[in-house]
Amino acid sequence: MQQARHFNELKKTVKSLIDALGLGAREHVALVGGGGKTTLMFALAEELRLKGTRVIASTTTKVRHREALQYEKVLLVEDDADWRNKAREGLSQERTVFVGGSLLDSGKVAGISASLADAVFHDSKVHYLVVEADGSAGHPLKAPGEHEPVLPSSVTMVVAVMGLEAMGARLDEATAFRVEQVRKVTGLEPGSILAPKALARIFLHPSGLFKGTPDVARRVVFLNKGDLIEEKTKAEELADIVLADPMKKIDRVILGSVKRGVYQIKI
Image 1: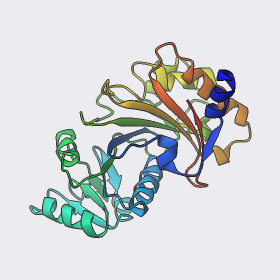
Image 2: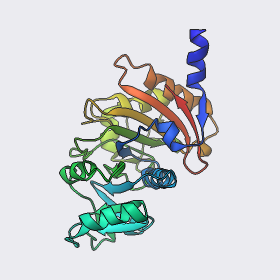
Image 3: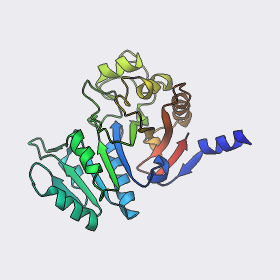
Image 4: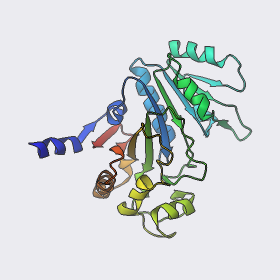
């Protein structure tokens, strides 16, 4: 009977990001990696808003201004001395607020500091804070740079995202952001095929996507864009390798597609 229950857990499929991530009543979620972080952040914030909770989205790096404008209210702390009161007002009315640093000449919004993110989360008006904690320049795969990710100390969950279109592709600049960093973590040479065993190191290596994660934070692997691959067994193999790690640091693996809104949970 125990084996049957475990198998059911492995195959649980849901249509809610809240359920897929296993979110509690109050969480500080940091998103790292590539393959759709920004889309995931907005989808999660919107789902939480529709549940009636108060959500602040932000970044400790940079996001495009047009992406920030997807949210009900956008506040820039360096341009508005009264942003805290306006954020509370926005949470009461619109329920989702994006908080950034300033608008840059590049058309991007600068992030807030990790310490300010901590202060935002400690505000009792905030139920959920969701932050992008690194950048990937639109690539499905990345490994952290020297100063990445920028994780606030109060994060309760770190979600490491990878786009499944990287599976079976070659390690090159079209697939990976910071190819050299990916090479160091995976042990692959540029041009090599990205197979499950090597990709698992992106999540399990000390210099991989969970680098700097606080010990108390739960670690979730999110394999996104499942609609773009035909060999589903390779994605399953990657999930199994990650979960079989003797250190048992990964809380769960999610295989799915934010675009389609369907998620399979493996724990």
